[in-house]
Length: 248
Image 1 (tube, helix red, strand yellow):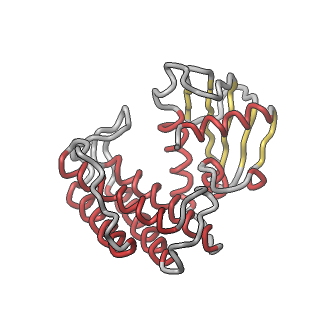
Image 2 (tube, rainbow, N blue to C red):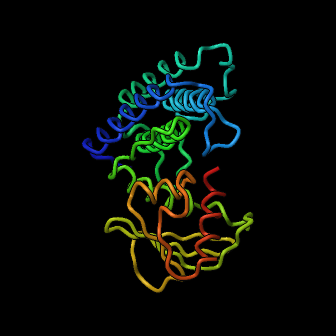
């Protein structure tokens, strides 16, 4: 999928800024517990995102999933490993460009362009995790947050993952999500989730919020009182639970 140069540069800038902030907060203390990821500490987050970065470096190098994976990195200093990994993933993306054929989990985009957006958004969410642990939360870039809502709804919720009815939340409803002039309409049942970037037709429930708040609520990093819901509250709650199923 073609990615304009200015968009690629935007994602790289977000990745670099948020990964630097994550390192800064990590240095406040690795032992702090992460309230958004029960059982995790800041060190867990730092090691997790390091492994994620190194995984993508290998994918871009091989054009396929690395096997075996992951390597044993337990003996590495967490922050030292992280600094190496975040530098490596930026270099790997820059060297790959945006048109390199490679493995992705997107049904529609099998190019390196996919990983520009995915790594920027992955980093933003986990940066928030470390900030929550130290109570120093800063907002996600507005444009990136809106793009993250789109990725989560269209790709992650709306992907072909539900055909076997493998869900604990077989909500049968239409839910609309709106933030800062953009809307997405999700039509859900036990075996499908179709998401279109529009506000067409009737909806059983509508969910509103500022981009940062709505994005982080969808990812389970903000409480329910950070957004607004109109209509069928049970449908909205089931929708949120369905989101959680496809993002864990």
